[in-house]
Amino acid sequence: MQGQQQTGQKKFKVLPILVSLLLAGFIGMFSETALNVALSDLMIILDITPATAQWLTTAYLLTLGILVPISGLLLQWFTTRQLFVTAVSFSIVGTFLAAMAPTFEFLLLARVVQAMGTALLLPLMFNTILVIIPPEKRGGAMGLIGLVIMVAPAIGPTIAGLLIESLSWHWIFWLSLPFLVAALICGILFMQNVSEVTKPKIDALSILLSSLGFGGIVFGFSSAGEEGGWESTKVIVAIAVGVIALILFVIRQMTMKQPMINLRAFKFPMFTVGVLMVFICMMVILSSMLILPMYLQQGQGYSAFKAGLLLLPGGIINGLMSPIMGRLFDKYGPKWLVIPGLIIVAVTLWFFSSITAASTVAFIIVLHSTLMIGVSMIMMPAQTNGINQLPMQYYPDGTAIMNTLQQVAGAIGTALAVSIMTSGTKSYMETVTNPADPANAVQAFTHGVQNAFIFGMIVAIIGLVVSFFIKRVVVQHKAPTAMH
Image 1 (cartoon, helix red, strand yellow):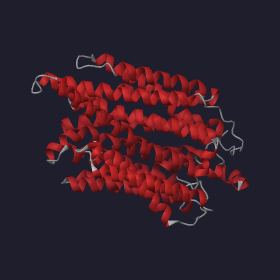
Image 2: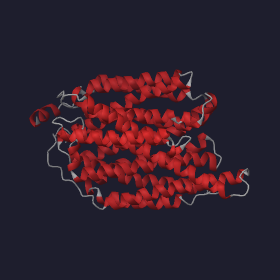
Image 3: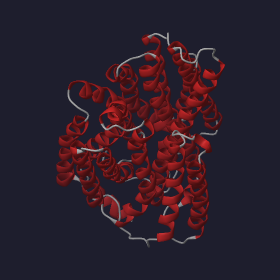
Image 4: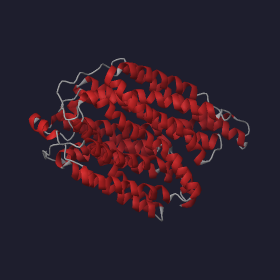
């Protein structure tokens, strides 16, 4: 197998393959967050409650949580070209339907189709890059992915805010279409098959347990933000079903000859540490990305566009830092990036926990930018270092595990942050003498936001403790040398 790759590798046109993947990935990630800013407008236009509107994001995450775990299996059943063309086609159809959507139900269906495309694309992107790029240059390449995965969600809200103010929310999707079509054409022309098609046996029970497990947990945590909160039967049942199904899923994978996701990847200690770091990072990023715009719009009274603009510098800094961190990682390894990164994140969140309705714009921008620099120091280095420890045949499993847990972490992080914020707001309102006073409402909301950031800080400190175990992985298996 090594020999085949050695000869086959020479023919890879790395740049066009990267361009096709990154362009499609960018739009996938852009549409994941662009709609967040439009939610308050959509509630009025489509006449829906916040809990219902939340489903446009939840359904997206839920689809990813169900499909991404199966991606490791799909990567072994279909060629890279087949998967790429299918993924981008799903994204194009979903985006077109969303651009035309007349009702909430129609838009929700479009979001699910869109998410199906993204769910296939993300693991494919990671896996392809792992195969075509030698380990000693991998940090830089993963930094490029980081640039895409971080900048797209960061500029999403700003561009969406601008489109909503001057055109209508449909344009968020019309804008994405030409880019997706370009990615598809680029992929049809240049995409090559990089992984071997081995067609392992498909185990229906594994797929069912994984869907119930990850789906149940994502659904349960996402629904906790709605009326009834954590006490509601729906939330308790969903999480309980999710946990039981996941335990059964793990037992089944460990006893099968050809598991759907090979959980033996966790035998490699740096992979496990990497997964934990990515999990913690995603919880912090996604919860603060949800809480900050809310604070800027409700606590400070800014418009959607202005809130998006204020968060833009941090997002761009994060994107630009990602390739730099990738190169530093290639040179020095993960330890000197990840530990200081987590200290920066924890300290910044501690500062965030003191923001009030009177906090200045400059203060928010500086804190958000600092938070994003800290995150860029943790995410890619920990992820790349972890995957580097895996033998080549574990790459599809490793990328499936990492990408699945990112979606689960996002759902858990946002749900916990929102419920901590809500209960903080509620408990503050119970202490005031005049609950009808609007000033008290803003104070109560800010109090809730502060609590949510303290939660983020605690998560970051747990991450800091774990990060002391991180060690640089020296890659044993030599990758092909086509790129030197």
